[in-house]
Image (cartoon, rainbow, N blue to C red; front, side, top):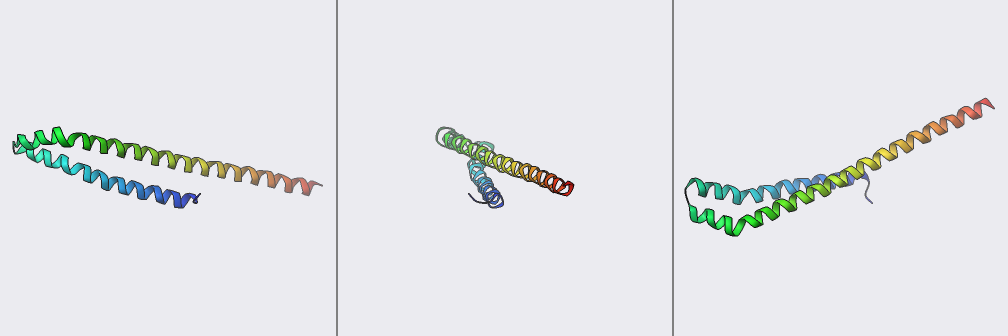
Length: 104
């Protein structure tokens, strides 16, 4: 497995890509809003009947990917936390050993 810094960078890149994806998903919404404002009912009906499902599916996909990234970052955090606790316990144990040797 990659080290944690590399993995966090990979996840940050994924978030950047998802932000760009959201901009693309927003484009048809902007278009339909303009069509609605211009009272272009044909374009609004077309969007509702042909594009709305695609937009919804894209949003759901993005939400799922964000959750996966969140889960991965939580795992990395927990891994780091365990490592730090393990290192602290080792340090305490090692210092006790030194004191024990000094007492002898």
